[in-house]
Image (tube, rainbow, N blue to C red; front, top):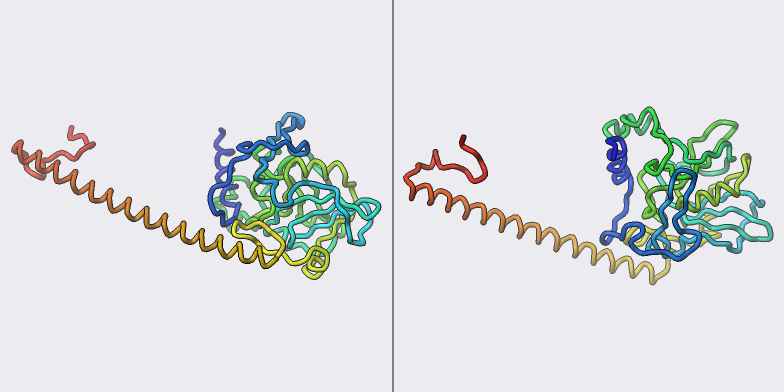
Length: 299
């Protein structure tokens, strides 16, 4: 892998925030039979299928009834419930699961679709470069579109008053982030969903980002579960989260204890090995200063 892509992979790992209760399966580890999320050849790039693990919990694209009063063709983003709607005729909408980054949380109100791009290039903002030059400075000149690009297969750019707001709705190469809050980026969708939305939305379409009051009225209250995924706030969900957090804390404590025991055992073994080394030297008439250390050449 080229050095720049290797570094980007490390960067993206740092961008993803979630208190996971274990390591989720990698994409493709659990096959999906859902036709909307199978692997697809898109121009010169092959988009991997979305693992079934990442689709559980309501993140599958679907045609749903819609209670909002927005006109057809409008994109509605709910960062609290982590849902995005493309409004259709007849009180219907296409619902997508999203991940919300820090930049996504900073946008409220309305904008319009000023531009769309297939396999867009990516460039960190000046603020990102200034605050974390060790991570972002190497990409100051931009990164071409492709499978390693954090904007994924498609991007929709929001404008206000004729100017780019820097708010993006885009695909992602991190399927595990959907449903979660992330440390960077705007609004992410599965690449398959980003392509679907791109094909539906028109330049000039209205984009509305709900405030908390609107989200509560239309979606109800949501909380993050123990793995960081948004779920409806119910007594059962709250109780489950509390149990899972206890289990996570217990698992972390056991890991710390296991690491401590392993380190103590390794230290004892090192001491025993050193004693055997010195004893062997004494038997052969070699003084301690001249006794060779195992694995270290004396030549």
